[in-house]
Length: 85
View (spheres, rainbow, N blue to C red):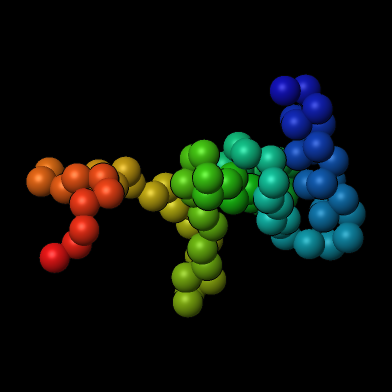
C-alpha cells in the first residue's frame, strides 16, 4: 500500500512540476479521483475486477463510472449439449 501511495504522490508532483493541472493513470487497480497537493489525480482502476472507467464529458468534467452488476441471463429450460431448435 505504501508503494501505491508513494507512486500517486510522485506522479502528481511531477505533473505539477511540468505545469499540468492533473494526471490520469491506470493499471493500479484502485479507482479514484482526488486532489494531491493541488493536482488532480485520476486512476481509472480496472474493468475486470472493479468494473470502473474514467470518462470526460463534453463540458470537460471528468467522472469515475462504476458499472452496475448485471444478472446472468436465465438458463432455465436449457440443457448443455442439447441441439438448438
